[in-house]
Image 1 (tube, rainbow, N blue to C red):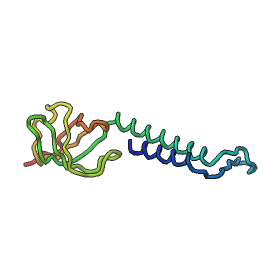
Image 2 (image 1 turned 90 degrees about the horizontal axis):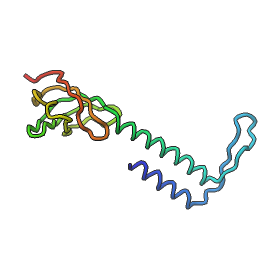
Image 3 (image 1 turned 180 degrees about the vertical axis):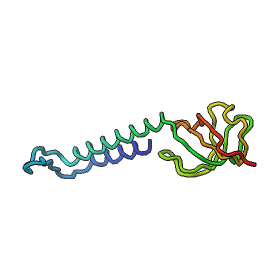
Image 4 (image 1 turned 45 degrees about the vertical axis):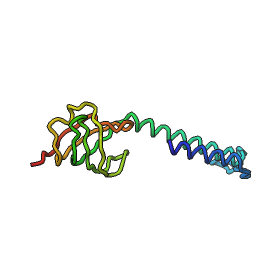
Length: 137
Protein backbone atom coordinates (compact mmCIF):
# COMPACT_ATOMS: atom_id res chain seq x y z
CA UNK A 1 0.00 0.00 0.00
CA UNK A 2 2.82 2.42 0.88
CA UNK A 3 4.52 1.73 -2.44
CA UNK A 4 1.31 2.43 -4.32
CA UNK A 5 0.88 5.78 -2.54
CA UNK A 6 4.53 6.62 -3.23
CA UNK A 7 4.07 5.82 -6.93
CA UNK A 8 1.06 8.15 -7.16
CA UNK A 9 2.87 10.97 -5.34
CA UNK A 10 5.74 10.72 -7.83
CA UNK A 11 3.28 10.62 -10.73
CA UNK A 12 1.43 13.71 -9.48
CA UNK A 13 4.74 15.55 -9.11
CA UNK A 14 5.81 14.57 -12.62
CA UNK A 15 2.55 15.86 -14.09
CA UNK A 16 3.06 19.26 -12.48
CA UNK A 17 6.65 19.65 -13.67
CA UNK A 18 7.70 20.75 -17.14
CA UNK A 19 10.42 18.19 -17.75
CA UNK A 20 11.08 18.73 -21.44
CA UNK A 21 10.95 15.93 -23.98
CA UNK A 22 12.14 12.33 -24.15
CA UNK A 23 12.96 10.56 -27.40
CA UNK A 24 12.47 6.92 -28.30
CA UNK A 25 14.90 5.37 -30.76
CA UNK A 26 14.59 2.22 -32.80
CA UNK A 27 17.19 -0.43 -32.07
CA UNK A 28 18.14 -0.75 -35.74
CA UNK A 29 19.06 2.51 -37.41
CA UNK A 30 18.84 4.95 -34.52
CA UNK A 31 16.07 7.02 -36.14
CA UNK A 32 13.57 8.78 -33.94
CA UNK A 33 10.37 6.75 -34.07
CA UNK A 34 8.35 8.49 -31.36
CA UNK A 35 8.39 11.77 -29.56
CA UNK A 36 6.65 12.13 -26.22
CA UNK A 37 6.83 14.57 -23.38
CA UNK A 38 9.08 13.50 -20.53
CA UNK A 39 6.07 13.72 -18.23
CA UNK A 40 4.15 11.17 -20.33
CA UNK A 41 7.21 8.92 -20.35
CA UNK A 42 7.62 9.13 -16.54
CA UNK A 43 3.93 8.51 -15.98
CA UNK A 44 4.07 5.40 -18.15
CA UNK A 45 7.08 4.10 -16.19
CA UNK A 46 5.43 4.84 -12.83
CA UNK A 47 2.22 3.16 -13.95
CA UNK A 48 4.20 0.07 -14.92
CA UNK A 49 6.02 0.07 -11.55
CA UNK A 50 2.70 0.44 -9.71
CA UNK A 51 1.23 -2.52 -11.58
CA UNK A 52 4.23 -4.68 -10.66
CA UNK A 53 3.99 -3.66 -6.98
CA UNK A 54 0.28 -4.48 -6.94
CA UNK A 55 0.94 -7.87 -8.58
CA UNK A 56 3.59 -8.70 -5.95
CA UNK A 57 1.31 -7.71 -3.06
CA UNK A 58 -1.55 -9.81 -4.48
CA UNK A 59 0.81 -12.78 -4.90
CA UNK A 60 2.08 -12.30 -1.36
CA UNK A 61 -1.37 -12.04 0.19
CA UNK A 62 -2.55 -15.36 -1.25
CA UNK A 63 0.70 -17.25 -0.75
CA UNK A 64 1.85 -19.46 2.09
CA UNK A 65 5.35 -18.82 3.39
CA UNK A 66 7.51 -21.29 5.29
CA UNK A 67 9.24 -20.38 8.53
CA UNK A 68 11.41 -22.10 11.12
CA UNK A 69 11.88 -20.96 14.68
CA UNK A 70 11.66 -21.61 18.40
CA UNK A 71 8.42 -21.25 20.36
CA UNK A 72 8.93 -18.83 23.26
CA UNK A 73 5.33 -18.63 24.54
CA UNK A 74 1.86 -20.09 24.01
CA UNK A 75 -1.47 -18.46 24.78
CA UNK A 76 -3.58 -21.36 26.08
CA UNK A 77 -6.86 -19.48 25.50
CA UNK A 78 -6.32 -18.88 21.77
CA UNK A 79 -3.51 -21.25 20.88
CA UNK A 80 -1.48 -18.34 19.49
CA UNK A 81 2.27 -18.87 19.47
CA UNK A 82 5.13 -16.49 20.07
CA UNK A 83 7.93 -17.67 17.81
CA UNK A 84 11.50 -16.42 17.53
CA UNK A 85 11.92 -17.24 13.86
CA UNK A 86 14.56 -17.11 11.15
CA UNK A 87 13.99 -15.04 8.01
CA UNK A 88 10.78 -15.98 6.26
CA UNK A 89 11.97 -15.62 2.68
CA UNK A 90 9.83 -13.23 0.69
CA UNK A 91 7.85 -12.06 3.73
CA UNK A 92 9.83 -10.79 6.74
CA UNK A 93 13.24 -10.65 8.41
CA UNK A 94 14.14 -12.72 11.48
CA UNK A 95 12.29 -11.59 14.63
CA UNK A 96 10.20 -12.72 17.56
CA UNK A 97 6.50 -12.37 16.85
CA UNK A 98 3.08 -13.56 18.06
CA UNK A 99 1.25 -15.59 15.43
CA UNK A 100 -2.43 -16.50 15.49
CA UNK A 101 -3.19 -20.07 14.45
CA UNK A 102 -5.86 -21.14 11.99
CA UNK A 103 -7.13 -23.72 14.48
CA UNK A 104 -6.20 -23.82 18.18
CA UNK A 105 -5.56 -27.56 17.80
CA UNK A 106 -2.43 -26.72 15.74
CA UNK A 107 -0.63 -25.66 18.92
CA UNK A 108 -1.65 -28.70 20.99
CA UNK A 109 1.38 -30.52 22.34
CA UNK A 110 3.72 -27.63 21.51
CA UNK A 111 5.83 -26.30 24.39
CA UNK A 112 8.07 -23.26 24.82
CA UNK A 113 11.54 -24.18 23.58
CA UNK A 114 10.26 -26.47 20.79
CA UNK A 115 11.75 -25.92 17.35
CA UNK A 116 8.94 -25.70 14.80
CA UNK A 117 8.43 -25.44 11.08
CA UNK A 118 5.33 -23.54 10.08
CA UNK A 119 3.52 -22.14 7.06
CA UNK A 120 1.78 -18.81 7.33
CA UNK A 121 -0.52 -16.92 5.02
CA UNK A 122 1.11 -13.75 3.72
CA UNK A 123 -2.01 -11.62 4.05
CA UNK A 124 -3.16 -12.54 7.58
CA UNK A 125 0.09 -13.87 9.11
CA UNK A 126 -1.95 -16.78 10.47
CA UNK A 127 -0.23 -20.12 10.90
CA UNK A 128 -1.97 -22.61 8.60
CA UNK A 129 0.35 -25.60 9.18
CA UNK A 130 2.69 -26.45 12.04
CA UNK A 131 5.17 -29.27 12.60
CA UNK A 132 7.41 -29.75 15.64
CA UNK A 133 10.97 -30.45 14.50
CA UNK A 134 12.51 -30.85 17.97
CA UNK A 135 10.82 -31.03 21.35
CA UNK A 136 12.42 -29.27 24.28
CA UNK A 137 13.70 -31.58 27.01
